[in-house]
Image (cartoon, rainbow, N blue to C red):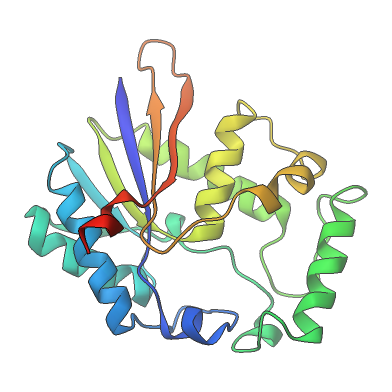
Length: 211
């Protein structure tokens, strides 16, 4: 059995302000503290590879974790956050424009898996990247810790939960139940004999008790 430890990055300035993120947000002081806490937790787990998204917030989280687990991170764009329309970057999640986008996106899940608003990643784009991410993981030997993003973790988990048969209508019924905490820990396990994956833990943040 091999395990993949998925970690959401620490809190960012845009998380704190409730803004739609691009790749430019940075960790807050709390986010840096969260990164140290998950680093301490990962130091008690044996794994061979430390991988992170190449966005600033995941690189910053990884740099803190690196110093604790004494492993060098590699940065991989496959584990970036799901891209939202650039016209909405730095706007409030509670704003009318973002709410209207979400309403249209959710409605599209029942009728058109390839719907898109503008320049964002749509459902099909993200699922293609999810497939490529699992293919990448299959090239690695041993357990892996990955510092990535909340929405992308949710898509990885939903894909495993549906045995790699996630469709847009199924995602419509799942997405609101899958939420991740900054530096929450999600664990997937693969049976290397038959290739099957399962969910072991979702969004565990017991390490906050060490705070």
